[in-house]
Length: 343
Image 1 (cartoon, helix red, strand yellow):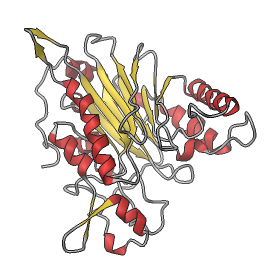
Image 2 (cartoon, helix red, strand yellow):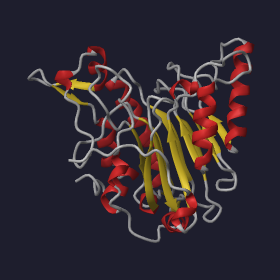
Image 3 (cartoon, helix red, strand yellow):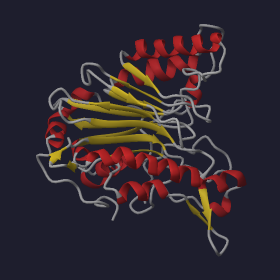
């Protein structure tokens, strides 16, 4: 089996010959690092955000490690001001409107940014409970189909607890529940789309994957193994895949799988993590997206962008056909069946 490698660049949006809506998921390690001195952003911040992510011209950008761009409520005023200034600098650099999630127990809060011309509005909802790191959850709408909300979230699953990730995963299903058209007292509530992108800290089901399964018998970081694998009755270990199974069961689909299975873009399944770690079993594909069974069919390309020397995670770029997305929001065609891409 050929193991796909991350790409050194993503295709330009103009190369598709049609209007593209670009979704990007990035986990810039610790937000590029601390300021070199007060008010002076570090070199890796500029390389990551200004020189690497800004040229992508994302319409939606999920970020899962805003370490220095958000502060806890009990932080001193100087820390809060520095975080606010850094967050404003990021929005100016990217030319996007940003939404930050509240801080949780984890030290790497989440956020997302949107291009105003693509998504003029945005309603944010906060989730202070259950999540170790609360997701940035923002409801958007495409001006072409303004009556259909797009429920979006950038999330960062618990790194240390399979049980915690399961609880967080089920909370994410509450967002997916909005995809259904509900009927109450004879009145139909609006249908919705749903995009969930994040650092899952878990693994995809191995069927059809190009990245080999982790051999947990070779792992020397035993704490990491306990965080990411489940001990079996015979003493062997199995990778945690709960979130992937959960999303598949509720008819959410990985756009990278769609690109690989339907568009023959096998490099879409390239690894996104593990390349910078020692003793943890090697590369894996833990940064992933899940999309509802209509809008995932608007995918025309998925690229895993090499972030070596900038981050311990690669960036995932998902390109959607604007015209097909409009049709998907109008539900002009049939949805994919659950597990269609992973059976």
